[in-house]
Image (cartoon, helix red, strand yellow):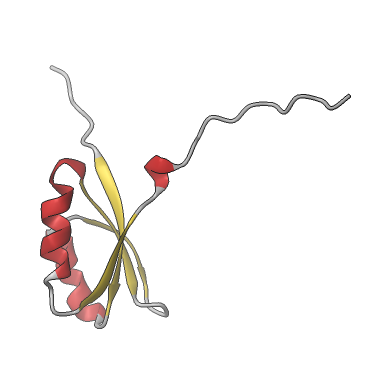
Length: 84
């Protein structure tokens, strides 16, 4: 029996109302809620990402949805060559 790790996508969802933002838990996993800046860090299924983002954007309390750029960053670091 083998388990596959689901591909996740991180989102920053900017909201008008924090109480209504709890309903985002139905769409994905809530990781963090900023009360001062009014945004929610949310992880969703990467395979259904486009469909879920459209669904989130249609919610009445959502102002903006930003995708995580983590996959686009290079995570391979190397030692710089000495000069001279």
